[in-house]
Image (cartoon, rainbow, N blue to C red):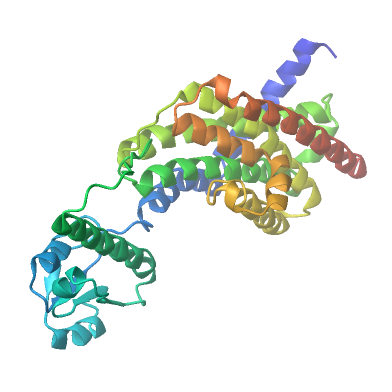
Length: 377
């Protein structure tokens, strides 16, 4: 068979896959959902940073220091502090009126300047777990900073020899949606590529059309390549629309680097993940088994690839094992390009790793696919 004829077979089989996907409303809804609603909600619905956390302050000192501490809590992290009395604190927290209640005792400023160690009391409503966990450390840091600065200026001490100047790069406002939106797009590319290619193969097996392909003058390599390019194209187009309309449009996340470079890396990752989806489809006997197998594969790929948790915080053994996963290198190059505006000179090791992993994944999947076909013939 000529090379031209082989390319025509791959092209026509790929078009067949696209028409099959177009006639599958469930898959179409899944594609739209994961690149729109799932991306938006994951980025904005449950922020890890504080936002309008209600706080009350019992100021029994009424000193310049206590007023300074009170004025340090302001939106958007906190709502304007409610000034309450000691008798109102327990009732207000029981009613859920505020998450934090800070008690400044009498003579707090006087005891501090006299060299004593006065104590503040912070009451936290731990039923609001997300705010309580993050907000308690915020309150402590804000209070300690105001007390330290007040004492330093009051006593007339010279400035400290080392002054720490914080400059937050790439995300100056520490907006969690900037990180969450882009990472979700990266995760959805991996998930959808595996599901689409695996489901396409299982759908053909369940409908009996795989037998029709076996009697045609086409090779297993052509069948696999057709599924890879067609499903990969669908995922790339959906990811591009998600970046433009959801991430940059609705969420207002700036993209620092080159989108063509990012999608070139995404294409290499898709070559590996679509091959992985075909391999999993040859192992599973039906769609329910494929769904359960996908959960076992996708969770480690997404949780341990560095998108959710930095790889440096994982055990060294896990870091080394995950180097064989394409998602690890894709997350690294995606963060470097989209967050930090890195060029090819920075991310070429990840591109090389994706080429090697993709070639290995395709070879293993092709071997398994040929074995499956020979058993069916």
